Length: 179
Image (cartoon, rainbow, N blue to C red; front, side, top):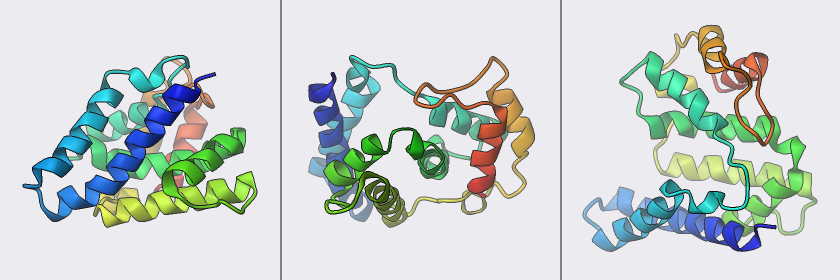
């Protein structure tokens, strides 16, 4: 069980959700930046992966997008890929996504796990919008994104991710859903 690590990761996400808009509103807000920076440092150093096999599918998929077009910023690409990934894989473990909805996004308390998961994904997308991030390839400026070629290259060594390993067809479907 990874209850402690999960709780720390959830706290980091709540911190980023709380302080992200403050940094966006005032980029000179040192205190808000410190909160974001500390949460990011723990995430970047792998602490939230202790006791589990991490899933880096979203990063692998996004690296294909920003590798195809170097003007695309990794974080902006992740804002497009992550909700599409969440919607594609949440059925594998709805409770995990329901926990995210309830503990991080603060929604779905009275809903069953599948409904809570859907509410959490929508709340996450709404937060991304408040951060002025794109949610689609079109908003990202990747209208002419070569989806099939990117999916093929992404999976050139096999499936990506561990939560639900994604094959080329899965990555293609995810990117098409993100158009």
